Amino acid sequence: MNTEHGMIEDPRQTALIAAIQEGLPLEPRPWAVIGERLGMSEEEVMRRVRALQGDGSIKRLGVVVRHRRLGYRANAMVVWDLPDERVAEVGHCFGRFDFVTLCYRRPRRQPVWPYNLFTMIHGRDRAEVRARVGELIVACGLEDVPHAVLFSRRSFKQRGARYRFVDLPEVPAASMEAGRGVS
Amino acid sequence: MTATAQDTLDAIDRHLLDDFQQDLPVVERPWAVMAEQLGIDEEEVLARLRRLQAAGLISRVGPVFRPNRIGVSTLVAMAVPEQRLDSVAAWISSLPEVNHNYEREHDFNLWFVVTADDQAHLCSVLARIERHTGLAVLELPMLEDYFIDLGFRLQWT
Image: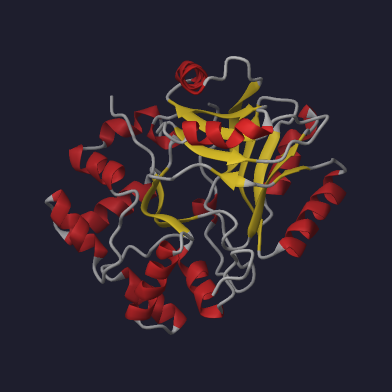
């Protein structure tokens, strides 16, 4: 039940999304626990989750790791000022590299912001991130393309996106704040 | 937890972190399916996941939603004077609509994502940020996503 903008309007579906976005309960039958909270059967919960996977709303379902805590202490947003007609080609080229963890086209905001392709690159240290940027430049033919490397210095807040800001249970502060420190 | 966090992980933890990032089965007892693949029992899978979560190595076990399919969101950048950065960043982080919020090395030094139920809600949050801080926001919504999220391949050293 999607609108023309691809947004989901079914209230039972949005309630389900609100219930699973912070992660599954670590209980033997997680879907049943969620169903109990929502007044849905375990079967309905599972059917709705499969539907969200089927239409691409859920990109993946599983363990979400914290890079920084696992030793990937450097991360940079690397932004590229590409001719508009090359964005899609280069975007798909970047998508092949497993160290690229995001790759989006975004609008330029001239004159202060000329960049239109955004990537996130993780590495164990800054030298590794820089080497990976170099690898992308060679592999995707970007020798003449201006780019900027914005290393992250501090993480003030890091958590998955949350939707529906009404009727959501409060989340303990400890699970909302993470990854403080210098990289 | 420091850079040595990895050192406390055994082979099963690593297997668990590396190989279950995308296809958790949507069945009544998903941990039992994982347990079978890991060669341990269901209770131990749960105990390990709880421990890894408590240690901050995993943020959750659950879905990663495609941006802008559910609700609307945008990346936002701000150029905050150095001496105001801590207080502006803390206030921004306190907003429930903000998830990731980072300091980055650039004139635009504060970067965060705002997520809202709809466009009107999103605009009101951005207006509120500009009003409260007296600083302009650079709104950079996603136009196209070229990335297929298959999770993150960890390299164990």
